[in-house]
Image (cartoon, rainbow, N blue to C red):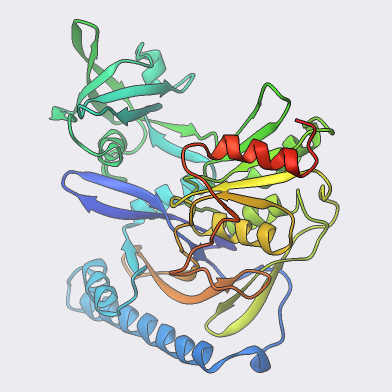
Length: 389
């Protein structure tokens, strides 16, 4: 079992030639703080769910062991058993995929260092190039068209599939492996061969609006995010409010989400969760900024650890939540290693907000619905909360 306490590794989805990486919620038992009372807090549903989860783990482990004894693939057997379990979040990862997931949680990834978007005509355009990355060294610029990756045309592909092509399969495309980019800039077209590298992610970005409002955007809860957010809050102008932008945040390390909550709460409950029916709790550290006006922005891409944070701020009356209903990923998965080094991940429980709300399959409803104008609505709300902006 992994030594990590609370984390959300990427979900993998095979689509043609690409590997799509998407964060989904996972909990590893170990050092979660603050236990709630035991048997008297377990409902019949908790006990039933615990028994079902334990049975699923046993079935998957047994299938893998039998396949190993027969000289067959334990991973393939585990995948079949997991698919039959009825667990919508069940997954089995290769050893390479899992190593990549752990790198991502440490704020690192293997790739070439570019971001892209799909235009309305289906073309893929580079939107950003990471400084010091292989793409930057090769002269790739924002605005360039990415026509192909290793000879496969990208026009019309979802951006997630393009990212998968750039990163390659975790087992076959480690740092140092080459990838050929087909590029276009104006009338010029050319191919550029670059080598993938282990790069650092920027999970937190901070910028200040013209009125002094600080916007803290968190793309994922990777290692160190909690400390970064606390520092950003300390550095923000004391007389102005903060917008915590969690739109598109698909999860990450739950301990970092709790650390982020600690920037805005003076201790207290952040969430409760169960693992195989045992009830536990997560608490914020004391000393957070509890007075500054705060708005949390969310949307349908706000998932898992990001929903846990949103629910805590909303239930504790610390933030006004603006945007659209969140994804609804509130289940807890436990990873376990199989004989061939692959990892099976099955649901073992669920978490709840401080008021006892379940998130899984429901999501979190914002206090104020907003679409594309969400940031402007957030600024209006801050004004109503006492921010002089």
